[in-house]
Length: 234
Image (cartoon, rainbow, N blue to C red; front, side):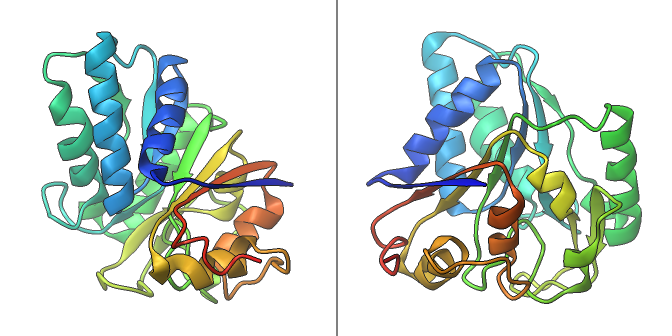
């Protein structure tokens, strides 16, 4: 396990640079939702436009999704479409493998499981995650049975631990920690306690802090933080 903590003034921009490298390398890249990732996606779209490059052979996957239609304002796919895909205009878009939240948690999870396995269960080149104030990662929430899943790559989450309180679809821990590089992106004081619990010097794999279980099992993790989110690290 290797966890690299980077405290920077603009984590979204630092994240966009890492995404750009993975995309231009034709990698399998896993996206997440949230306001800070939105900014990173906007930065990535701007970088691709400015250098006149497209996504090449890159494939975009999703780490989790809310069980809503793809045009719903709560959809992670909609966020990525608005912030990253639509702004590219006539620049060639990547192969996008969205989670079909409209199918519901169980059928949607089965569908994405088939999608991943039909693609050869690729080892993701870069997997982007946020961390919730409760320590959740993707849609793996504290103390839920989903944390114990070890056979599947994707699982349905019947009950969300935080708003919006809609069922979810999520990659499982084995699918997440199999990524070549995992990047956590966190900003703001509201994330400081969770960041310290997951990545601080006393952190250990704890089902009450799912992000800590990712940190304990993965080979390489980069944690991009602003000073506020890093405020309780010792």
